[in-house]
Every structure is written in C-alpha cells, then in structure tokens.
Length: 431
Image 1 (cartoon, rainbow, N blue to C red):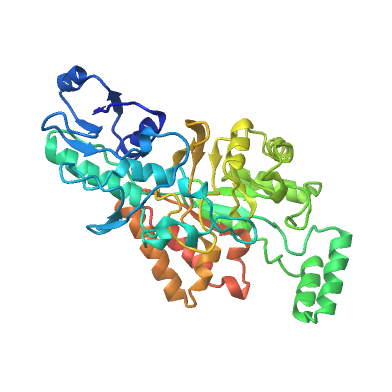
Image 2: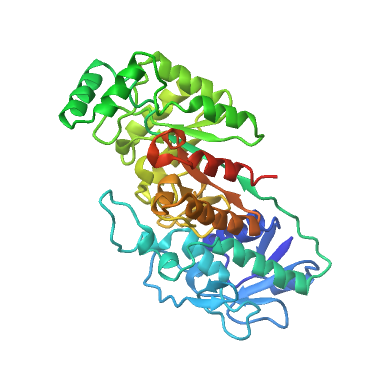
C-alpha cells in the first residue's frame, strides 16, 4: 500500500491518486495529514504538498486538486522525455511535473466545461483540446505518467513488487441501422424507391429489390460474420443497438418488427448488448428511460452500458441522466474524426462531477479509434499503419484498447473495403 502525506485530503485528490495508483499500477493508496502516521509507515510512501517534510519521496503539488469549481488555468505544456508534461513542479520535486493535477485536468474533462467552439452537432472537437494543440493526443499520457511514478517508487523502494496488468481489447460494434433495405415498412420502402429513381441511383434500386425479393443479403446485415468472429475469442464484444423512435436523426428498424427483436436476442446470446441512445434521449431522461426498459425487456437482463448517438455528450447532463437510471458504463468518450485519447487514458475510469465535486459510480470507457476516423487515410497501408501505432501505444502501458466499428463497416460497400481485415488485426493483438 502507498501512503500519501498531504496538507489537505480532498475528493479530487483521492479520485486522481486512485486512478493512477490503483487502476493503472494496481497499488492500493491511502492518505494522511498526520506527520507521525507518515513517519511510522514502513512501505511505499510519498508526500504531495508544497514543501517536503524531510528527504522523503516528494511531488510538489499544484493548487488544482485543492480547489473547487472551475478557474482560468495557465497551462504551459513542455517536453518530458518521450512525452509531454504540464504543471511544472520545480527542482525539489522527484517528478518534474505535478502528474496528479495534470491527470485530473484530463480525466475530469475540465476543458470541456470551459468556453469552446462546437461543431454542427454541438460536440466538443479534437481540435479544441489541449492534447491536440500540443500534440500528445496520440499518447495515453495519464498511463505513461503513472509508469513514470512507478519508476520513481521502484528506485526508492526496490523491494516492493508491483503487480503486472495485461493488455486488453474491448471491441465496440455500433448498430444505428441493422438493415439498409429490409424491415423498413411499406412507406419507407416506397419513399426509398422514389428517391432512387429521382436521383438516378439505378444500381441501388436494383440492389434494393434484389434484397427485398430474397436474392441478395442486405448490405448492412453482417451479424452472421460478427457472431462467427465473437465465437473465436474469449473476450466479449459489446454491441450497441439503436432502438429509439424513428426521427430525423435516428432511422433504425422498429422493435415492432419481430425479426429485429430476434436479431438483438441472438447477438445477446454471444456478446454483451447495450443501447445506442437516440439523439433525443441525450437530453431527455424520460426518452432514455423508455429505451432502457425496452432493451431490458428484449434481452431479459439489466442494461449496464450506453453509447450516445453521434458520439455526442452534453456535460454534465448526459452523464447525470445515466447515473439516475443506474446505467453504470458509458462508451461515448472519444473523437469521431481523430484517433487518440480524449481523456488522456486507456484505462476505464470513474466520472468525476465537477459541479458537485464527487466521484460517481459511472465508469467511462473511452474509445480510441472510430472506423470513420480511419477514412481520412486513403490507402489500406496508411490505415493499418496508423491503427497499429495506436495499438502499440496502448500495449506499451498494458492498457485497454477500445475500437468502435459499425455493422455496415463489415459490408461489401466500396467505402468500407478492407475494414474486416483492420478489425481482425485488432482482435489478433490479444495473445
């Protein structure tokens, strides 16, 4: 156990130390403000305050973990070996930066509460982030910092055995539309037909009726392939189905269609299943509750995971709604058009509510790669190279790699050619 001496024990301090020490390094951590307790402890220990007590392991603290609410922070990002650091700690500190305050800034998504430019859907974009501006978005920087702390602790306490964690993959499959042509109802099929004719999409019109007459498989129906892949691996995929009402933003099949319901049930027999919360469920808790209850009645078990449509988050309301409905896992945290680590980590973490200054029961599972973000790389070789670099970063810290693919990504549609092999590449990285 690591004992931390500090002048003031705050919720922010406990939250951040537990993520770095317990979740990443696997070491229990406790806190004290009593000098005599600190001196008496004969295992791992460090002080985190403004001045060292004596010659103990010391990290000089920034004020951030002792504050409440938001303030205008002056952040200077500097090079630190193969990575970056901010909140410089001064010469007497055993680490050149206060990695705890910096980690809290990234994990709490502090910057997303500050004024920023949003995209057309109201999303926080990668280009607005500190990590993008200072070119460390491609590193799980919080995990890297945690291992730098481990190195310092090992040097000071060479007899202590640190546990080893293992690299994992948590594949996410998003299903905003299970079928492209099938099970859409008469009116939507007629509307689609006239649209194909009006826009001279004759190839699509031919494909539509080949599928509807049973001569061809629906292009979005890749579930047989997905289940076959799942059977080859011990770790579970998590599949998010959109089951909300039809709207401008959400156009999935209706749960009134028995075949759609049986599809969800059959996937749930092999993989974990969650809901892709509809666009209007983002701010409306009653809509979200309705979708949650509907999914629970289909899969006959409690729903534990959600992913929001369009990867959109309205902080803190989106997360508070999940907590109120006792949904304990979220898979929305990531960027739609950029590979990398939005929260700076590849380790699932608890959401910290900055308004109430409390750690919540909601576990955030940040994703690091969305299939759409790989489209910017033209060749299959480029896609593979960038994906492999990302995987290598996660492997270096024995973290959890979370890729998000869609059911249509595995289709024969030209745009998504080669994506099955990219998904296979990810699965094969787990030994």
